[in-house]
Image 1 (cartoon, rainbow, N blue to C red):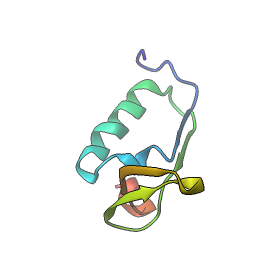
Image 2: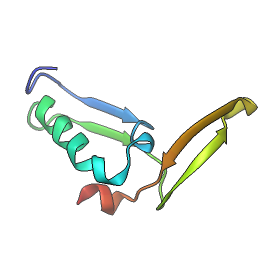
Image 3: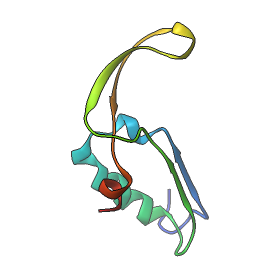
Length: 76
């Protein structure tokens, strides 16, 4: 996406797949593509730490690492 090309951004449960050390780079990209004063809507697992998830919704098997974070941590 081009710089300042977005009128808003939705990151709904996508940050759960991003480890803590990569969050600053992700937010830098959010900032780069969003126009000033445009909204950013986040959805994420609240808490700390990460774990492997082996079962998805509806009991479907999966293998994915889920990372939890707090609002304060993401705001830093």
